[in-house]
Length: 339
Ligand code: NAD
Ligand code: LMR
Picture (spheres, rainbow, N blue to C red):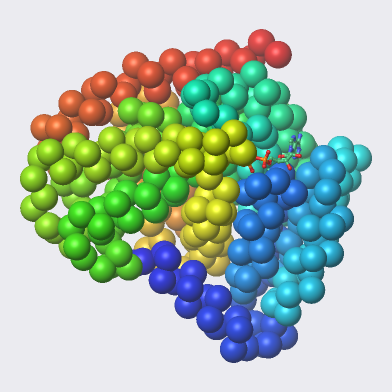
């Protein structure tokens, strides 16, 4: 299935039909960090999604304006804005999916791990509130460093007695979006038909695109595969440098976040064969969290799929990424249990 096309079709459907005729279940989606660089376009894209009936936009400030603006769009969902911690409970109550792009972005010269000191605390606080007010929601974690923020969220939920590994996702869809785009350019194939799994984590060499499994096949030479791998791994940095101090990817991330949330909603609604890559609790490798293809269903993760056949280059990449990914996971777990 091609999620990008399905989102486009969903948007086309909604422009043709009145929201009152939707025969899909009510679904509340909350965006935490909705006034930010990702949060605003992501809120717009979720407003265009006909699977959403209630759109809850939360941030520490600025959400009344974003919500008023987005709410004028004539699509199905009812939009509400919530600002400040005393409105967080209301923002979350009844949510089916909570998307978290809250936190600071990188500037040139920084790694995603340099964001840990600020974002770890933000994610911890927001996850504690989710445990309290909507413990059954599917959590889509966008805030970086994803390799650590997902383990932090897991520990916070465990402490609250609310952890369900099927409901916690690190959003790595942007890596897949980039891998597809870059591959299509080199393979000279229709980008809308491209599929490339991206596994591992979401930072530098922990991002491992599996171009040996890319379709349509193109038999690209090894030096091109190496360059495509490096460009996918450095895709975030490419944007950070181009924005020259004004943040990191926001528009492509909003698109990727909307695709992933759409897949979660489809899974919740019982649509069969919804498969996306995501950083989840995993036994695919010896690491407790790992990104790979995941089948989504009525309870979130239905099945974590294996890696399939890897090329020797990908096998090497897999072994090289493990120490860094392990350290980032452990850092997150330690933070959650110490603070
Ligand atoms: P931004 O600074 O533009 O927006 C962040 C928003 O979070 C701000 O509006 C801020 O007020 C809000 N915020 C801060 N603390 C909050 C809290 N406690 N509760 C609710 N909201 C809070 O940043 P951005 O460009 O939107 O990026 C957000 C995060 O997403 C960063 O950590 C960035 O690294 C990450 N990111 C991840 C991916 C990915 O692929 N997973 C891609 C791009 C960016
Ligand atoms: C990305 O991949 O674009 C994000 O993780 C943001 C970043 O810091 O690169």
